Image (tube, rainbow, N blue to C red):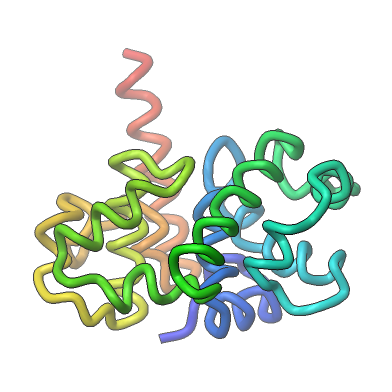
Length: 188
């Protein structure tokens, strides 16, 4: 299955072909529209002028990375803090996973280990970890058995609760409706 999360063909192709791009998008997927978070790795790659590489991003001068994040349109609503968070995640990928983000999920021993690996990344709280596992399980044939159990309720099929459920324009609209309803219920 091919991603349609960025709603941009080239950006979605990058997400399909680059584990670090998907991971960076998930890092950025907070306090901005989902499509903006998932197009950001493509824009970052364009601004860097070379393929995304965790070690290179982690090794960059932090002020230079912040400048790249802040170029209009900024890659995030909070470009400085998110540039640091992306660099921190990339540093972990480079040091602990041989500069291959996919090893975070491909080398997991079981669903609990997968949850532990992802939740230990900067910016990945409980729900974001669950959503990311659901995204990998539903759209990228995650090979870790019982992944659904560690990401409840986001792993359930036929729901439209998160980015994990977006496979076309119709499902995108359903996820937006769900999120809007959740915001309203929190305000009430």
